[in-house]
Length: 162
Image 1: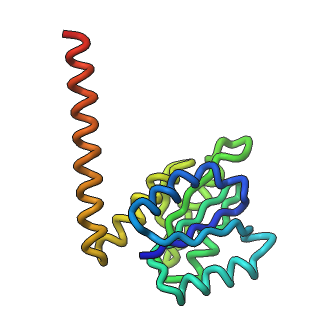
Image 2: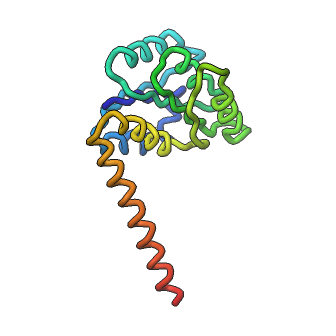
Image 3: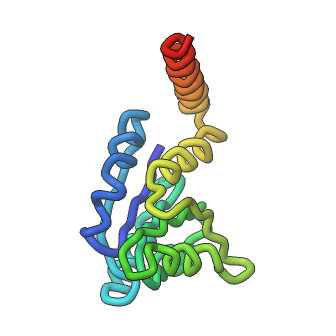
């Protein structure tokens, strides 16, 4: 099980670090790079070529402002690409969100919320759980833990105001 995580700048890492560690908790190998679609396009192509040939299951691509990286990545692979718009400009990430979500027909990028790295990681796990039964079991357990945590918080809230 392998995920490639590419971000447009090393400054995006704080928005993705928790997600990367979350993937590792599920025994997913994570290859990480900080490469610009505009300034290092040859290196982006090399990174995605490696992903196309090394067993990578899903690519997560994060970028802010013009946010071309997820679309450029999607153009280079038929692997599922999940775009993470990063808040990083005067437009509070709306520019990145619209850039990522408005891909032309035929080159889709699944898109999560602005700064939604964790949901990108969870979506990647769900995609891979189709192929890997052990991961499917872990994801079902994770969902059960979330449900139990939510119900416990509700019980505490109700008890506080009885």
